[in-house]
Length: 90
Image (cartoon, rainbow, N blue to C red; front, side, top):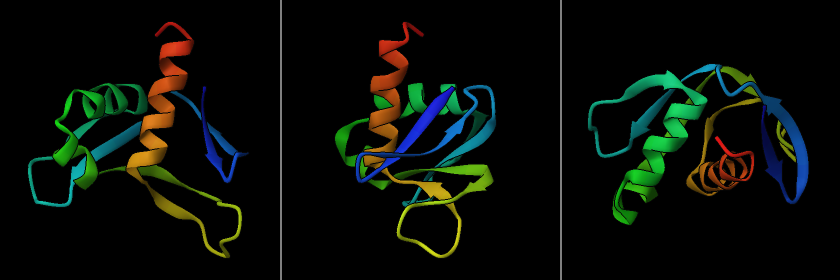
């Protein structure tokens, strides 16, 4: 289970096998896969492309300090997910 953090607080767990889409703000072709595969693909990108990448969720998630739910994970959140994935041995 992937866990999203906002200001060091757990916001919502996301199943690693939940469908998601890794998108590039520069307009490159998206990767449609699971959260796990999107995170793995993200870390293989060059730093320039990582800064432009986002993961589009299939289910929006609540965030601390926001009134509305969000559909996107930012690069910093994706990096934290990778660290969690690596710590879990996946």
